[in-house]
Structures are given as C-alpha cells and as structure tokens.
Image (cartoon, rainbow, N blue to C red; front, side, top):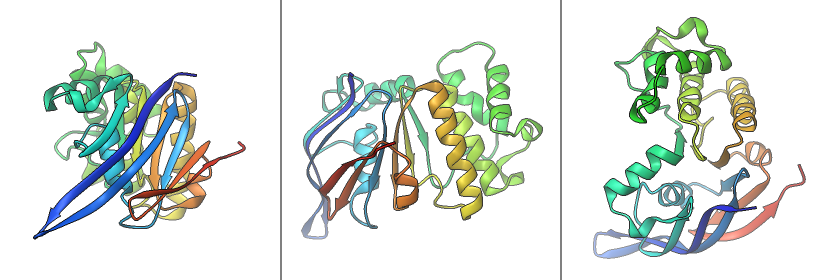
Length: 228
C-alpha cells in the first residue's frame, strides 16, 4: 500500500510577545492511500495546526511533510496551491461556502478551477447524492447548518481529491444532523476511494476511522489501529 501522506519529526512554533510558543513537537506518522484516519486531542493540542501543515496551508518550522509524493517544504506558496487544487479536498467546521453563490455554484467552483467541462451537471449530480437536489438554487443564507455542510461535502468531493481533510466537520451541528453528515461523509468517501483525514474532539466520530492519532500538548501520545 503506497503512502499518500508522510509526516516526519514535524515541529511548529509561534512567537508570542517575547516568548516562543511550541504548538507541535516531533510529530511523525504516515497514512496509506485510501485509509481513514482521525487526529484527536483536547482543545489547544495542535490538531488544526497539524492539519494545516499536512495540507500545505502553512509551512513547517522543523521536519518534513510529503503529500502525494511531493515534499511540501520544497514548494513555494503558488506551487502548494496548485497541488492542493489538484489533489486535496477540505471540509471545515464553519462550512466556508461562498455567500454570493448558490449551492450549485459553490459545488461547481473546484471543477471550474480545474478547467472541467459540464461543471453544473456534475455539481447537480453530487447535490442529488447528498439529498439537496431541490435546494441547488438556494444561497447559503437560505440553508440550515446541516444543509450547508452537505453542500460543503458535495463541493469537497466534486474535484475527486486524492485526500480529504475534514476539520471538526460536525462541530457546528446538533447531534442528529451531525450523525447524518457523518454517514454521508463516509458513504461518499467509500464510493470515491478517497483518503480521509478527520480532525475532531469527538471520539465517537474518530472511532469510525481505521486509525486514531492522539495529540496532547503538541506531541503524539498514542496511535491506535481500529478493528473495523
């Protein structure tokens, strides 16, 4: 099984006044292509920072990240953006839909960035998969939180990413709505064969993945294999 993500001795610090704040220290792990993987830990443990470094949204201070066989620290910002556009999908806690675009247009954006044809046709099919075919011409402000996150799911899978990063995907949803979104996420992921990396404080969600990495104080505490 090939490795889609290799993280080696990763470190990240920030200047805080005249002090240096260590957010991540000596973090190493790897993820197989097609695997489902959770990063868990208490608030402030470095989970979201780690996700940003793995996805090339930020640069490391120490260590290396290889994503899809490419060393991210050897790329400039534009090159990292191109790699993300080609290989990476995102789902965020606060949905991050474009407010001036309809659900259909939001889902079509990654396809248009990739120069695909029939973008609205593909987007409409994906919205049907997440049960929103009747809401495709609605704007985010006209949709509930659960509906917005389902649009975000459809958008994330629209560009057929090699790897999908989900940062607290149910964090802004009630438990029942969150459960439906999680089921959709795993169903779509299984169908697409995408590698899925979830950052969450919700152990019930984490236990649906094949492996769990636990962080505390910016360090790896344990790594567990799940018997799924």
